[in-house]
Length: 196
Image (cartoon, rainbow, N blue to C red; front, side, top):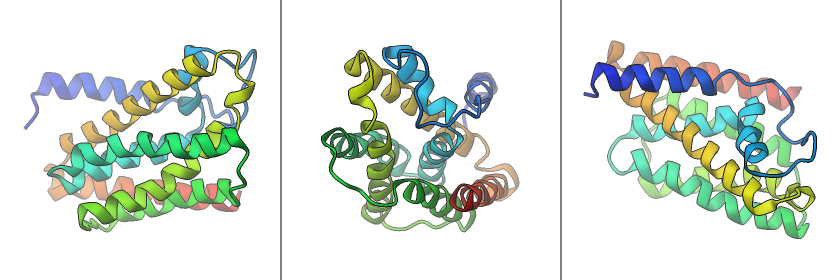
């Protein structure tokens, strides 16, 4: 069980990352480039932030290698989606795919779904393509695409870590019911993004 001090630090980090500016995650403001813009990007779009948080939370809930394999695989597969977006390869229903990722991942957590690791990786891999595509499609407009991408990856990793921290920190709290309830609420948020 993590120490109380570690949990307190992780809770503070989570609080910081869950205060988004509610801006649309797919519109860059200002010059739109550089590390800070890339870092801010996943934090300013609640749809992306929730999905990335769920990846960490679900991995922690599944336990074993999934604690790290899911959060590591997601940004790596996002790169493929990002390349598709940069290249202008058509991908239909990107926004719906992003909303569905929140619904499916939230439901997986709420239902305590523990599939084989390969299947969990396939599920998050499909959704990572949509998330990567949405961001890759705008990278050519950034003044410094490499720095922007690096900032985005760092922020994504931190959101995954927040999900892991919550998942591990509250794993034993009421038999994991807190995490399951959180997954259900997040899944409902995905329904909002799907119909909005």
